[in-house]
Image (cartoon, rainbow, N blue to C red; front, side, top):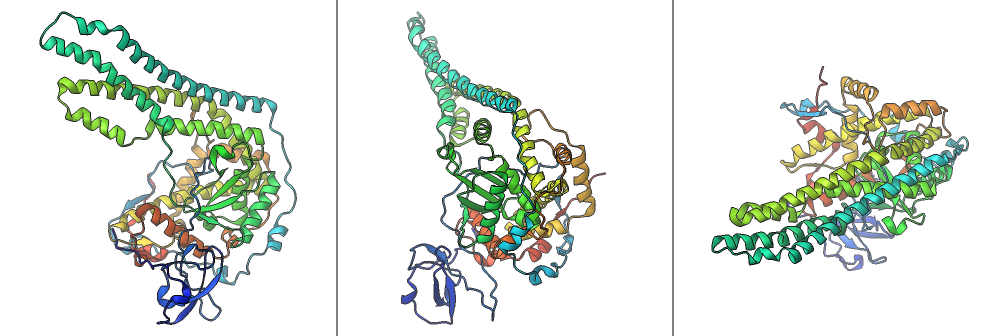
Length: 551
């Protein structure tokens, strides 16, 4: 689409010809250091020590701090976050619109804070000192545990109802073929006999089609996530130390892996899905825009919320079961694939004298999905109350970690970051036609956040104050959650206002590398690196801007 990304033939360093100035580089997997020609920067090579591929980057030195280029994505296995993510709820107004002007349509972002470079590096001692106490534990009422168990039983019963419908469809086809053979012996001739023959065979086609489309969701694998970037304890010791301490504080198991994405989100989940269901094998997925836009106190509260879901063994597993079944119902009701397209194309291409059979099959599939839709809403209505209560329970962990005021501020920031991310997506789509991409999505989201008009931010606050929770919502509205946090009260046990991005050894490098991974998942390896533009310049070049609030 945009050209070929440069690739090396993976030579060994010792065999490369020294035709240009040598630079120092290191393997992103084993951290082994090498020297390489300057012309190799940006190329993918194989490490002679660990045999893993990585992209050549020039290491920073005190004499000449080189601007880092996006690193190659690590070859970690892809993970799907299946636990409930504490993400901002969508707001009704569309935040962006093409303003049809020039680069001045988006104001230039304010200058970076003066202390960003002069701030001393974060240390483990400073992190430890920010924890001012222990978190009080609260036991979940027995009635709530029984309610959660009853909700899980109902969800499993819905699956059994669905399987019973499949069995009934199979029996209906069998019964028709064995008990309606008299249709073939009717004393009619000519065209009538042909029509009776087609009518007899029609259920033999319609039934299996309906059964296939009902079985397909049970057998189909969920769509794979984009390539995932995983961090290592060796390369990011502060982040792992902080996560370990948060887990220890809330009484949750420590994650075996930490992944980073470009989403305004964070979630903890079983690392191997059902294979980890009975163990304590977790993966933490962190959206780097959260670290870019939140303080350590706020970010730690989000982590406390996520791990709060896993602080209770039985409740956590039952919640996982309920959520997994709910997500499965939603996927099979709304997801379409090539088989749906084939059925629609076949129904439109055949002559109506025969095509009516396919049309009936298509109608039967629609009816089966309608049944699924009903089951989905029954499950959501039954489990919604319990799942919302589980969110309130996790919110208590967040409130006790960072305090009630921090909880309210975080809720508002998450909403604003979510809107800023929506604007960033619109800007990406706009500039894609010119073959331009921002080099750092997290930075672009922060730029959009800083340039958000006060009227838009006020509108978000007003919307949060007017929200109401629906019957089928799995998360309470922010207004109710903030009110519950105020009832919990307290100043929290963690008191650090430093930016959360300080937890990473080099946030900019990780964020650019994660952005590059995102592009590889979206567009493939044909994206050239010269298409990347710095976030402030990218925002100024975009016509998409904040939409004025409606009166």
